[in-house]
Length: 239
Image: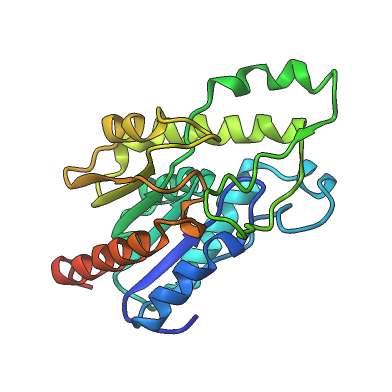
């Protein structure tokens, strides 16, 4: 979605799709912010097997390409939902001269449950999907209904890389975190807050939404706080 000079790169979550971030993207674009929201490899199809051959490296490469698409914009904020938050933090750490701020919605950057993925893949090829944890009726993030177990190891690899990179993240950071999240619980936001190197960092509680909060009852709050955050970057960053 065209706009600018300010821009936002939106990154969706694991097994999800850009549909989960479209309303936010449309709101930002309506307020003059350029928006790019790429589809991560293996996602957004009706075949869960399409996800089986993808890797963490392919997801980070897609995030890089999305940032490249905003090369003419300044400032640029990266907004990550769920696993998209891990991609956003990794991108901010690797490209601090091009990412001016980071917004995370229910960040998914660590999960002790993934430690057993290597053993589980020898028993079953896939497990039930984790999408559409949404309190508001009638919403659909258009996600995969099954998860190939082999791909969980790639999520774990991304989490490890992101944890190592987080101290290098020094840009302003905003976390929007649901107080009730059935997908990842409540341990991820404090982990990010403790580990990142940012001096300007804030957590805003979402009290009426579950995991996919961008499609939930607090969507307006997410829209407003994200736009205000981007506007604050305009006031402090010189291109």
